[in-house]
Image 1 (tube, rainbow, N blue to C red):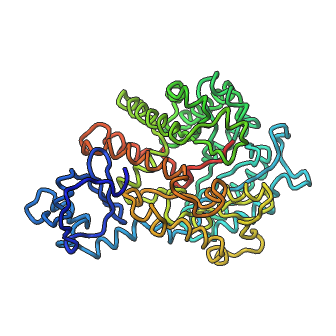
Image 2 (cartoon, helix red, strand yellow):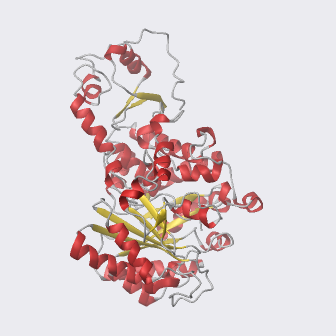
Image 3 (tube, rainbow, N blue to C red):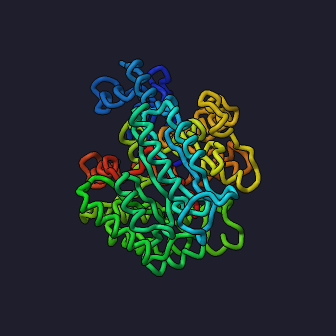
Amino acid sequence: MEPHSLSLTPIDIAADSLGFFRWGHVAGGVLVSNDAGDWALLSEDEFADVLAGRVVEGHPRFADLQRKGIIRDGLDLDALTARIAQRNRHMRRGPHVHVVTLTRRGPAASANGGGDGGGADMSTETAEGVVEFALQSTSPALTFELQGEQGEPLHNVAVLRHLVETAQTRCKHTVGKSLTFRVLTNLTAMTEAHAEWLLANDVEVVVRLDGPAAIHDANRAWTQAAAHADVVRWIELFQRRQAELARPTAVPISAVVTATRRVLDDWQAVVDEYVARGLRSIYFQPLHAARVDPATWATIGYTPAEYLDRYRRILEYVVEQNRRGVDLIERTAAVVATKILTAADTGAVDLQSPNGGGSGQIAYGVDGRIFPDDDALRVDADGDPIFLLGDVRSLSPSELVRHPTVRAIASASLLDAQPMCADCWNKPFCGYSPVRNFITQGDLVGQRPHCFECKHHMGVSSQLFEWLAGGDDSESAQILRRWVQSPARLVDGRLSLPPR
């Protein structure tokens, strides 16, 4: 998969006949791609023909490569420019993901919510300030992701409800934006009354389900998820009530897997559990060594190579389940497939260039302070306010987009300017988080050979292109296209959820 590892007999390159593209060995051939997200899989002989200027009218690949701008003959520059602009329209969208931390209280806290006076909960006034600030975004669609620093935002359920209802009312009467609400909960404070309210207000519930009981409950030593029996009970309740409310296309509840070593050692049982529970999506969230103390990492961690080996098997198994008629997607692969197969804006800020920290995503602390993303908020919680942008009471949207930190994040994550990324075939489908680089490597840019995201995204894309190499008529390619259209695919959100 090295960008320049192709072994060819030395030839004269007809530079004047070529459009701009990147290339690499993928899926047993040569993949060429450009900034518009256009791509083609070629044999080595076909690629040699491209380089030598032999792909001319009458060549079997001429029409396709001309349309995609890979060759210059007949290049429609205006159309190519329009496709590049479409691919990068997230840069003009404005903040659309608003991650709101409603409480700092831990699992033992009362589920009744409401300010303890010590700053542990977001107040109603601050929640109103968050809504007011978010609705000033230029984005036509906003996603509010509601969480707790200790994993349970329902410990402050009164303010959660107030925030959702305030946003719905303000948007309906004054703004007219499309709103999505998502709550990340460990279910320790869930009640049937809360569940009915969440369903009635179309708030998607995201929980942690790490596999069957033996695996999930063993993982609870490292996460704050509820016991397996409780998680399953709530999943069944949400699914049953959603069916009773006759809203079959909505996704009332979805789940995330905390991918510890135990999970990866028995990954098939984890997937089987999701199938058995009737869940329509599965997302394996890899751990990051920099976020785990060394002693714990020695027990639950793994190398990037170990993770990617298991992940590839997981993807193959999920696709096999689809061949058997199971409706299940793997979320990371679904988002990457969307970038490969369409020009749609997935909304996944972690796969944007430049990264959406501060420009596509904002994170709010319980006190209303604003950060470029949730990772930055956690850096602040560890005692380093380096990513603080301001607060909802004093920061204006125009000051936000011009903030030096937001500009630094954009500059550091612009793949065109980064070594190894600038000439990588996966560049149109990739992205990384400078804040995560700061956490794991000590600076915003980091080094690609030491970047887990780089290896992960390359591995996902390589697997997807192997399936797409069979052509649109292959069963695997058809499955990927279904994933792209699935309502269970993560949109207007982020692939990296809080590691709890």
